[in-house]
Amino acid sequence: MNEKKDVRILFMGTPDFAVASLEALLSAGYRVIGVVTQPDRPVGRKQVMTPPPVKEAALRHGLSVYQPEKIKEEGALAEVLATEPDLIVTAAYGQILPKRLLDAPRHGCINVHASLLPKYRGGAPIHKCIVEGEKESGVTIMYMVEALDAGDMLSRVVVPIEEDDNVGTLHDKLAEAGSKLLVETLPQLLNGELVAEPQDHAQATFAPNIKRTDERIDWSKTAEQIYNQIRGLNPWPVAFTTCEGKTWKIWQAEKTAVTGVTGEPGTVIDKTQDGLIVACGAGSVKLTVIQPEGKKKMSVLDFLRGAGASLAIGTKLGDW
Image (tube, rainbow, N blue to C red; front, side, top):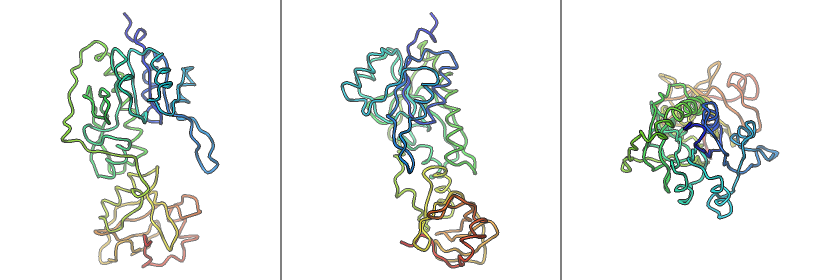
């Protein structure tokens, strides 16, 4: 029996992270019978209806696409069950699967999750691990259950987090690592050679989807915490502060050592050729790429040459 061709795989995923796993399955010769993803959504200022990246990838390969608003609804569930999958592979799909769907495939349902479980269960594990200052992340492949990222683990791979990594760079590393791990894991899974390892639920931590309050910089935190927050939200959704009543998005910053100059948290304590030095609760950071309200993203060098030329040392950021 040719496992790759005989096993009917239904893939479920939505964002770019999931595309790498779908492409890996297809490149490895597995039989993907269809793709389930989220509905098209309005995007941008003009609210243009935009398909999710997984849908675009599926259509490029001529795959059937299902886009239920809620997978638990009877009609949607019946349509998906009618595909008669032998295995369901999910990656950042965005909904918890109902028990009837979990129980349907003979090889079960597995998930490619972007963290070293049981740490960082939830929808924003890549953001959270950087914000929390972790030195490593990774990908875990586990069986799916009717609880958030709580199933028994099948395999995992560790991915170091570099000092200058942000969400974008780490996302790409994890997507690639996860796709490789998936095609390495499947032969052993399909041949019954893997023994699943239960998670230690007492060690579980969570990474819920990012809220607006998570994006606001609290200047009373340490320079290390603020630096991690900024890179942990770049390139999406981007940390922000305020300056003289206007919102600034803070795209990039550097840790810096300024001696002999202090100020209240949030105070601009120095201006260099390419940055604004801002006091934190402990230490300071240098803002290097910002986006003032109503403006495009720009280097602080360009900002100080133009609209920011008059910005005075002693200006307080983050006043509300």
